[in-house]
Length: 63
Image (cartoon, rainbow, N blue to C red; front, side, top):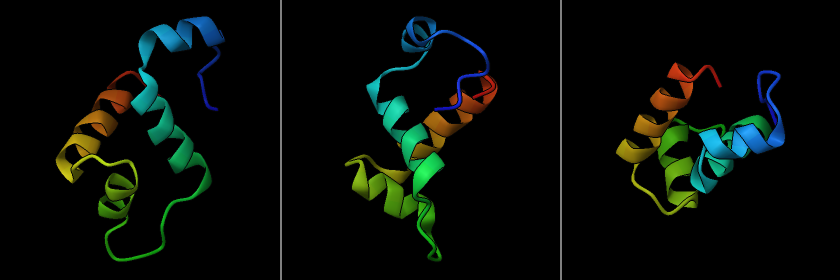
């Protein structure tokens, strides 16, 4: 998992379990279709807007 040189404990304090799942999906299995974010959101049982909001927050945190 990409952690920008921070410890596992610190990483766990910065992101929640859903964020960790999102990171894992993006690192391992980005769907190759016309709307990969929709597919990822469906697989995680969240809506696309929540996924995109969380991705923006992770980007702001430099993950």
